[in-house]
Image (cartoon, rainbow, N blue to C red; front, side, top):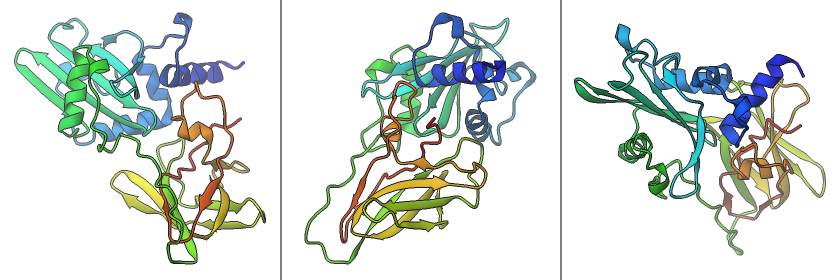
Length: 274
């Protein structure tokens, strides 16, 4: 296997599942993964660093390999612990990567002067999670169930609601630092094989989303773009499992659409199917 592919596989395993000690990486090597580099760049947008903090942006501090840890709710995070070379006890950095939502938050702490510095503007709950990770107590803490990082179940279809069509909606992604403008979201009627496609997308904060009206029926939902010719990124079991390398199935999920019902979190994001 070519070296580039071996390195990429090693990084994916560090992010999404356990690996052997022989595959260990320095955190700096994670920046070779496009979406991590893009997310880290966004997290540091507008920040200025003194000379002694120049190791933070490239993640070039002293530290061990990234680790996958679970919080109290069972959610998995990739955790990075780093410190300033030759000043490790005074200047430390904890980084939390959320692989399922492709977001990164971080906390720098210094002892002299005593200071906390957060990156990517975490809210109070995320700040608490960062402090818990810094103290080694991530397993005892989690985000509130209503926080954006928490998963919420799809609403069950309600029979008898007025209307000839239902809707599906969800979040889009692409394995790079951008979402191609030509990306289509398509719904394939399982019974008739008819395709309904749209390029209409909306931005909600840092997320790119879609919404589509469909006649009642069952559909396979996927995204496609000319940037990845011939590839369909389905809403699949791999997506529901958390886009985790430990999840082996990439089987598309049949989405039932009922009149007047909005099906949420139908995220066609499986760009990783073999």
